[in-house]
Image (cartoon, rainbow, N blue to C red; front, side):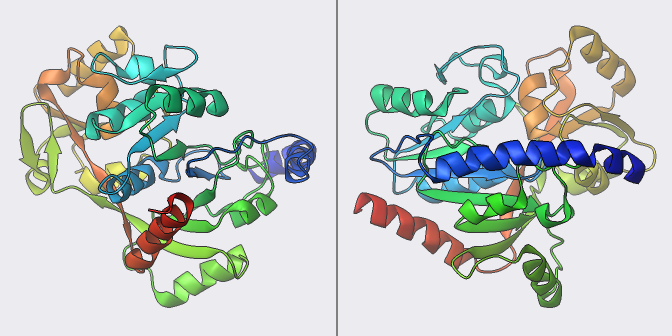
Length: 340
C-alpha cells in the first residue's frame, strides 16, 4: 500500500493544484458564490466518506427544529431521480437516496430535498417552502457555488485529515488548507474514554486557528433495534445468532458492537443498491435468524422480501464535552443571522 501511495503521489499533487486554483478563484470572487437571505449551514469533510455526517446532520436537526423551520438539502447520492426533488409522502429511498430518505422518515415535518445543483436546490426550497428559516447543506463542504454562513468540518478520530494525502494517493478531496473555511471542526467517532491528553494531541496535529472551535464527538448506539412493527433490546440481540449486514463506508464499528463469533457478517459497498438476487442471497444466508443492519441500509431494504425479519440499529452523535458550548455556538449564529 505504501508503494502504491508513492506511485500515486504525483497525481495527488496535480489534483491538489487543480482544487487549490479552484478555491483561490472562489476566495478572490473571480468565480462567484451565491449568497441567500436566510442562514445556510454546510456540513462536510475533507476526507472521502465515513466521517459521520448523517448523525451530525440529525443532531443539528434535533437542535434547531424547536426554534426554526428547517430544510435539509442533499445531493442524493446514487438516487434514481434527477434534478430537484422535494420529499413527500410518496417518496422512496430510490427517489431520494438513502440518507435523505432517512432524514425524511425521522423528521417528517422538516423539508428534505435533493439536488446536485445546491444553488438551484435552495432556490426551489424557498419557492416551494417560503417559510424555511435555515437550510442544512449535507455533504457540501466543497460545493462553493453556494456561500454558506457557517461551515462545519468533520474528521474521524481514526482517520484525521491532517494525517491523510490527496486523492488518489490518499482520501482528501482538497488540500488540508481547506480546513481554514470551517468555523467549527468536529473530531467524530472518538472513543468515549478519550482523555484530555489525547484530545490535546489531536488539537496540536490539526493546527487550527484561534478563531476555529474544536469539538470531540462519539457515536452512541440505541438500546433497541427496530423493525417496522417491533423492537428488541440490544443486549438480547447480542446473544442471538444473527446476520449482520452493512453497506456503509466503515462498518467495523457496527460489526464489533453487535457480533458474536457465530454470526454471519455481510459487507457491501457504501450506498449499495441491493439487487433482487442479492436480497434472495441475504435471505438464504440468514435462514430463520434475525438480520440486523444499519439505519441507512434499512431504508433501502425494509420494503424488500427480507423485511419480516430485518431490524436496524439507530445511532446518534454525542459530544464528549462542551455540548452546551456547541449548541450555543449554532444558536448564536442563527440568532445573529435571523434576528430571532
